[in-house]
Image (cartoon, rainbow, N blue to C red):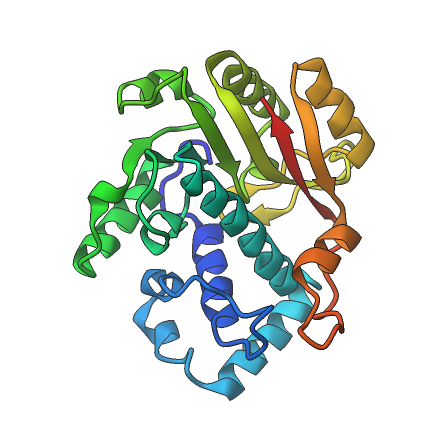
Length: 275
């Protein structure tokens, strides 16, 4: 996420996983991100309609990272739910590390929406949306390097209202940041906003572990479920929910016949906290 020189690899992978999820047959599992396919290379878009290709793709994902597909299905549903509820309340929304998030364009227009991301990924996203006739005015695009820039100075320059109730969605980002950057961002959010912060996080500490590399992105931050609650409390946040894999599966990966949809990745949790 720092000094990014190319479009985020994880943004493209996430878009592909979301696009594939749109073909699930069970209505309780089926993905709703029908715009995800727009961000894929033409060669991959052309294969999405093939059931055989989708099955082979999911098997390959399972071999490389067990439970990742199920995790993205559940995470997308969780953040969709938070986003939709915020729109109903006309809450200001800030997407931190927005990637190819399409919620501003999939849901009815509501409160002010800010998409914060590294410039390379953001510029490509804007180009794709424009090429497909999607109204860019639905969101304010705020280019930020999380390791260097003053987040709230950038937001203020785009019309962010520090006094308005705000939902911060930090989806699929926090584990790619250095601990110091996570800390400074959490402190800045607490000092410059009111409302709710939601993010997903690696539920194991990274100390003594090898970093996981994805081209220009490495995993640097992880923390235990109990420790994250203590940490957030020390910064002045109030934990509203801290979902572990079993809780996530029960809420978002239960099929219409009551059976579990796959096996969820065990190393990730969802956090929602009052600012």
